[in-house]
Length: 303
Image (cartoon, rainbow, N blue to C red; front, side, top):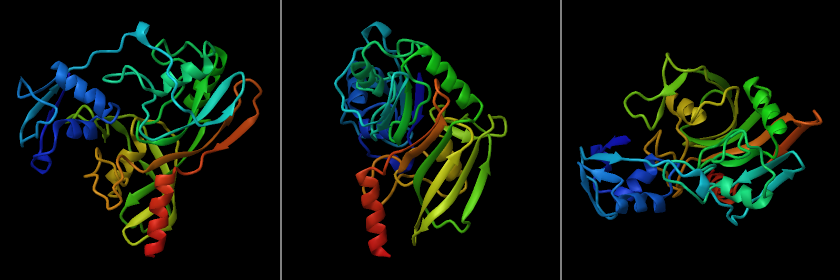
């Protein structure tokens, strides 16, 4: 069970919209279903999906783990950047959850991959995460590697553990960063005050993020970001901590932006790793999503 306490600034927001902004890995449709089923209570009572939250409301959310036997292939469009007998690299669209979990029994990248690969997926991740070697957040777009067999899975997992997979992201943050490049070295752990979030914590696990400025705007900065470690929400937590939250990120900032963007503007742009069978160095890229490029074009026009 997870609990949320409503702040004054969130007063009068619909409960389904509010929870969707806080629990990014759950779709709004699934949140509405959970409210209707009584899995989400406000001050201990069942409410309608249209209920508008009030300051100090206590929202209790009870999750039920998806049943593995019910995981089914689904015909969801995939943008495949690379594929062979061992791996598939997908340019994941924003809004797509990687694997089934709390509140998301279906409609995920795993369901789509199952339909595409049929029985050719590694089983190391279990029935709920077949082929999944690493993940990216629901509202982060871009490249993700899927393993088709256990040998590939083990090899890639070892590369990730040894920091041999180079992950490069593109990000738009609020604020104008003075430095041209910098490294953020701050440990990350689960937020003790809000277990849904992550936070910089000296008792946490090591987390290292490098960034360089690609372009500065009046109130925003366009960044290229490389991560040495892969902690949950690492880029989002680090950039928010130094005062430059990602545009659209409703969890680690107030989410406000004049572009109407829902979810953080973060794109997994490039992956560089050794092919798990041949050892060949693969360098794969995925261009920015249209919505992201449109925002940059608008900023360019504004000078």
